[in-house]
Image (cartoon, rainbow, N blue to C red; front, side, top):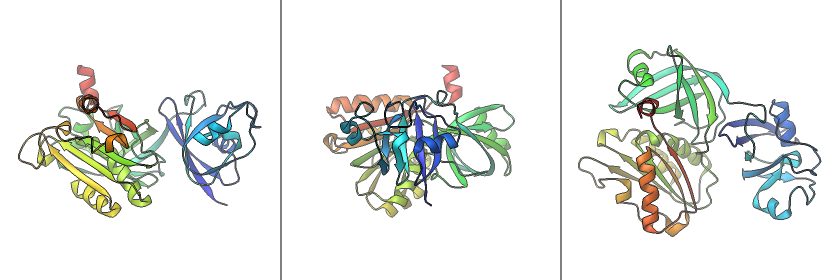
Length: 337
């Protein structure tokens, strides 16, 4: 018997990954794993369990026109009570995780090591009590030992492994930064809660433009890891923008993954110092990068970068095929604001 992973993305940003046998309906698999997907009939009649399949192959059995039209089925909508997966799948569930009586999962972990990558960033390596199913680009809440609080970080590693990595900005005086700088020791216990977030890599069906600002590179490292494993027929252009040359951390890893994939172009931009490209990302982005609108755009960076890129697209007069972005602000800066 073959078992597939089905990621359920709830509308509140929580993701739960369930295991579904190849002869099992998704609603049955979810219920078996204590997740109550919306459902009234189990017979393909009511349409209550209608979701959108963002990724994967599957078989749909009986459904009535009143519950789902053939046009909706062609677009990718499914009735989970009639859906049997034939590959790993990603489903968008039009309900909150609370309504479905589930919540982000807590997984115990221990620190393997902390790498001081530059004055502005740390690399955190942890061993997981069990593999965490997440979509490349998503984040978890990471507890700060001894502080009674958590901080949110995107995975910079591939999904499904027993070890995970994070790329973390060094914020002087920050709770996590102080822990990583002064107290962290191998074997320290952490709790990871998640995964969460709607910023994740969708199926690659056209050219890709990825924009990373500083430690916003983290989710793209996870994405590159998956693409290196699965391959892609479409080109990927990654802009990596930082303040100074010393902040171009993990560049060797990016380059190695790009070479493995084979159709990835990496462009670095420095705000300060001598470099082939200086200033800001928006000083270098052109309509060609957007393939005149036929590209998917993913952007992870601080709020000013996100706002500037959106304004720049408007000035270019080009709308990307899709635009996914995540703004990040350190918690301490939010509190000060």
